[in-house]
Amino acid sequence: MRFDVETLKAQVAIVGGGAAGSAAAIRLAARGFKVILVEKAGLERSGCLAPGVNALNAYVGRGKTPQDYVDYAMADAHGVARPDLLLSMAQRLNDQAKWLQSIGLAIHLDAQGRFLERSWRNIQVNGENIKPKIAAQVRAQSNVTILERTVGSHFLVTDNQIQGLVAFQTRAPKIILIRAAAVICATGGAAGLYRPHNPHGCQNRVWYPPFNAGGGLAMGILAGAEMTTLEMRFVALRVRDTFAPTGTLALGVGAEQLNAQGAPYEAPYGRSTSQRVLALRRQTQLGLGPCYLSAAANRDSRERVYRAYLNMCPAQTLKFLEEDADGLTQDERILTVEIGASEPYVQGGHTAGGYWVDTDRQSTVNGLWAIGDVAGGCPQKYVTGALAEAELAAESVATFLSQPTNNLSSGHHASLSGELNLDPDEKRAIEELNKHFTNPPSPYQAQDLLQALQKTLDLYAGGVSADYRYSRAQLMEAEKRLERLFPLANALKADTSADLLGIWELKERLVVARSLLAHLAARKETRWPGFGEYLDHPEVDGSLGFINSRFLAGRVQIIQRPFSPKERYGRLD
Image (tube, rainbow, N blue to C red):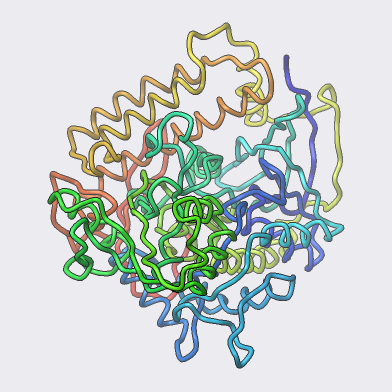
């Protein structure tokens, strides 16, 4: 089996059809541009919003300003974030909430008809159908070509200028070569790098979508784009077993964190996201676990909590009802769940790992933008922040394409494989995909090597088994083991395009993991002890700025960039 090759031409190609990518397509189509949107799954249920949401967690509440949101996010990140990115995002958050309401998202209102605030930073929604509603807006655009079940595999870059990308389809033997003047990467972050908290048949019961394999990060790394802050891994504090969000209880019914003795324990550790995880871990280390979220809840408040979980994690509602079949009829009872920490993830929505971008979200590769969870430097963006970045990028792309030298013909065309005129980079990308069909049989499957990768990072790079701790010697061991996996992955054999998808996601995770190890080693401090502790460097080094990297000449090269008080960063500042 070999892939046939088809070529398409567009003004803008967008990789990733989640919230950010879909919103960017809508904004650009409204400006009259021809867009190709590449989505690995189906548009209605793809990306982090696939199961829905019960709140918009990035919002500037009444009496607050965008700068207040910047200050909050900078403090939560312990100073490792970009004020220019945060401010440009925060200024647009509330408009994105209004846009979602305009397309039919049910947002709770107070008695005065205003958005109902859970806190000054978030508002309540009934959001089980948020992604289908966004997808409907994309499908309504006549100048957006949607390629579903299509995986972006390679960015095509010449002299640091984007030329387009290569993609393959998972339900047909076809490679699609997309030539575009501008490309937006919106593929999300990376799950599945570490051994999952829930093993065996429940291994995909995780916090971050298991199909987010770090594809856009890997494409950018291999294309020479600069990455930032990958070492700021995110470890989620979640309800044990179901991985349901804890904020629904903490904000919905005022639940507080208690140890096994029933004592509250958060205050001495601090209230940042990483400090909450640290508090849980320290209580467990002291023998005071397991830990819980607990609150008294009457019938009405319990019903609100149950409905809220139905909007994004129905398993938790079912678990509540299973544990107490009579709960809805009782006037008052204690609502309690055990909480735990997830395995680490690399992403730029809650934390700050991803592409190094300028204020308009263009990467260090000319003509390549990054938005949403794949864009670094701007944590605490959530849904509305991803939409804000899509709007910022769309405006920047429009300006970029207004320059005659940057605008390709807007028409699409297709060619049969025998008629293609391919340059060397295009040929190499196509052959790398096709070789997995011509490889001889391998003694391994992609899943075997994925488990080896996850075990390696879990044990030697601060996973759950290592209690999120790592040392320089352990990172070096992880690097040695990781390097052995690359040739084995390249030698895997595929019989179908679905097989190739599993192989390709493994290879994407290997590329991201290699850069992650370099970043962990380079940040010689422990700035976010809840997310990870560098045993050789247990203190905070205030002189360290951003840890960035580029993959050049087969090596991850670390770049240390200082914090800048400037309002805007250039792409190479």
